[in-house]
Length: 427
Image 1: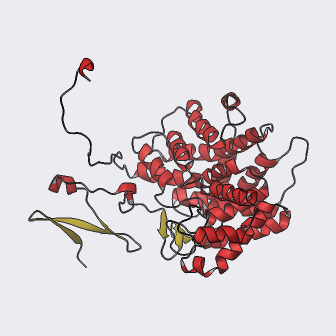
Image 2: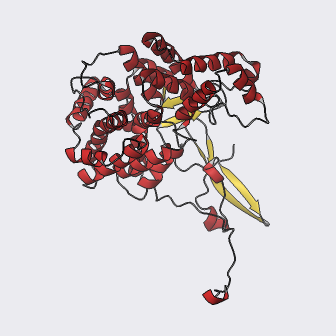
C-alpha cells in the first residue's frame, strides 16, 4: 500500500502523507494542503476529519467495539471500578494497589468545596436546570483555584486533576439536592468514591443512610460506560477550548455546556420524555412502534440505534443486565418503566428493528436506571457529565502534553461580495 495520497486538480498533482493508526485506521495528513494548493477541505460536522491523534479511546462503530487505553469496555465494566477506570483514562495505565489507594486518599482530602460556592448556588432559583447550575459552579471553581496549572509539572497537573475529581461529585449532588429542596451534603470520606456519590445525592436529613449495593454497582457501571467516547461534541469542545491554553476547569465547564444539548448528553432525558408522552397518550407501545416504522410519521423513537454504532451498542449489552437487577431489587411500580420494558421487548423481536439494527442503546437503559433510582429527568445529563469527567480530563491532559496548536477551523465564505456603503438617509 502506498504511504501517500495524491490529489489531482486543474492539471496539477499534490502528494500528502497517509497516517496509519495502531488499529489500522488510515488518515490523509492535509496539514500542508492550503499552503500547497491554496484550497481547504469542507466537512460540516467534521464527520470525515480527524482533529488529533489520540491514544485514549478506540471505537469501531461497525463492529461494536469500545476500548479505553486498549482495555475492552466489557472487561473494565466487569473487573474494574470507576476510580480505577478514571486513573487508566487519565494516566494511561491501570493503577497498582498503592497508586489507587493514594489516588483515592488524595481525592478525599480535596473534597471540601469552599462555603462561598454555596452563595453562588443560593443565587439560582429552584427551577434552574441542573446542567446550567453545574456548568456555572464548575466555572466558579476557577475563582477559588486561580493558580495557573503548569502542564510541564507532573505534580501541578496531578493536583489539579485530583481537585476536580474530588469536588465535581459534590457539585453534582448539590445540583440534585437544590432541585429537590434538600439541605446540601458533603458526603462521607469513609466510603468509596461511587458509594459516597450515592449517599451525597440521596441521604435524607431525617433518615439514616441505607446502603444498596445493587444501586451502587449499577451506577458504578454506568459511570464507567460513559467515561469516554472518542472525539464527540463535548470532548472536542474541551480540547478546542483547552487549545487556547484555557485552564482545566474552564475547559470542563465548556464541555458541560456542549453536553447539555439534546443531540448529545440530553439523549437519555429525551428517552424519558418520550416514554412520558406515550404514557400520556394511553401507553399503547404497539401504536408507537408502528408510528416509528411509518416514514410519513414525525414520531421518532428515542434510545434506539446509535449514530456511531451500526450494530448493537456494546455499552447497552452491559447495562441491560444492571437495569434488570435494579428494577427487580427496587420493585418500583411505575407505568413509565413498564412502557420502557414493552418497547424494549418489541424492538428486540420486531423484524423491522432487528433488520435495521435499531436496538436499545445505552441512553435507553441509563434513563430507565436513573428513573428507578429516583433521579429527576432533568438530572440525567448531569449524571452523564459525572461519568464523562475522567475522559474530558484525559483528553485535555493529552492535548496539552502534546502541545497541540490552537483550534482554528477554516470556512468557505458564501456572503456578499464587496459593495459600497450606503448612507443612512439613502437606505
